[in-house]
Image 1 (cartoon, protein in one colour):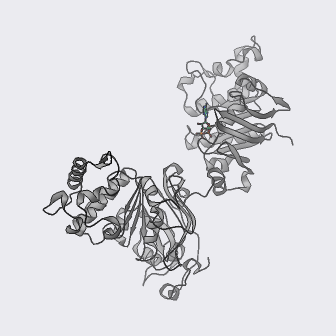
Image 2 (cartoon, rainbow, N blue to C red):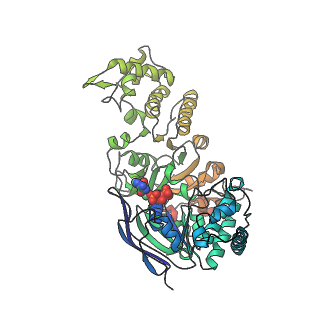
Image 3 (cartoon, helix red, strand yellow):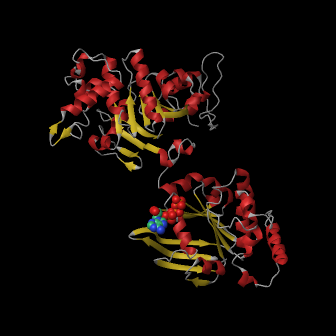
Length: 555
Ligand SMILES: Nc1ncnc2c1ncn2[C@@H]1O[C@H](COP(=O)(O)OP(=O)(O)OP(=O)(O)O)[C@@H](O)[C@H]1O
């Protein structure tokens, strides 16, 4: 069978920007072909070229047996191409029939009676299983009904290829299901449909083939039945999607931190982190639980650039940062509360005021014309001392950091790292050695940062702290992430098993104490379940764990 549409080597530039470049795209008769891509991938541009709204800068369009050079959408419509935009093109003060026949008088003949046209319209609607009332005013119709009018209008015009731009964006799930039924019937009748969408579920549910665009170019065209949402995502964004996104807990545009299979070496050349993948979204706290010394320090250090990565990639808001210097990374909006506040967080001989500007001392307003502006430094210190309830010694803002209590030292670090509203906050043992009041205060600051949109990576050996603050919890053991669970599924003994080296799948099946049943695999509150059925013997749970914990029990 020959395609009904063949677009070859299409390019479209806006100035020097290539919205489409060398795009090949074809559609078969009776095919529902999904055009998939992230925002700005070039889907609408390609369809606007096809529909005669844009002239291509290069390439050829072949439709229904002929090479075409559409100069307007009217040209495209008369050749049998229809397009339904996200915003319908109906006139609300006219009725359905008037809207459908509008502009087609000449083609249909002026003298045809309205009754006859109404009959024709009703026949078309019935043929594709759509209910419409030709005499209803468009203004009174629901969005789903208006979309049906648009479809019938396209069919009435003799459309052979219908382009639908994000048709479900405005529909309820029930209306979406109805629409899909109609599209399937249209396809059964031999009509071709191009479905522009971002929604993978829809692609899988209704299309025969998918073409994926990325940055104006086609990355792949595949048969839907031979592909998967996972594979299409990779084609669409050029890499694997993080687990948080796969589980629908955040969308790609909220992703702040992503680690992709990161391995790093410790001082002795051993792998202190191995194959670590994780992600944190804006407004979310990912807690990393684990017994001290299992790679937590290294995890924080590779993100802020204090330690190199042996393999894998690290992204901050989509930009790769592995290999960049600490100054560059911090400058991109990363706050860092280090594990050892004396070594990395403070200069103990400096005053509170000086410690509060350690990262910004050379910038305005603290430095002007190469000289410190002490007025600004002092007023900033006074403000922070008040805002973060820092108890100074008698010297006030001029107190040396070493003369303050541990809790107040930590408040200086927290104030400096949180106050500017970082994009990402890495908090390592933020309340270690801190009294109960200061702990509560620091927790509040971390939660406030999250509420303001900061992505927080909280690394702590205190399970209660992890439980109290985190939206998701990942467990680290010997430099590997053993699994991840939602806060709603927090279970201390399950996490305890993972901290001892069991993967999540192993831990949920492990017998845990007399009379305690294994946990069913409810990893995420939204019902995401593990289907692994491996069970550990008591020996395996309490006995020595092998070197590579992930290979402990084969599924
Ligand atoms: N008229 C225009 N002038 C300048 N740039 C444009 C124009 N139309 C589109 N672009 C640019 O071309 C790129 C592709 O846009 P296009 O609308 O085709 O993407 P899309 O895949 O349809 O995105 P979305 O899913 O957000 O609708 C974008 O970067 C967009 O800003």
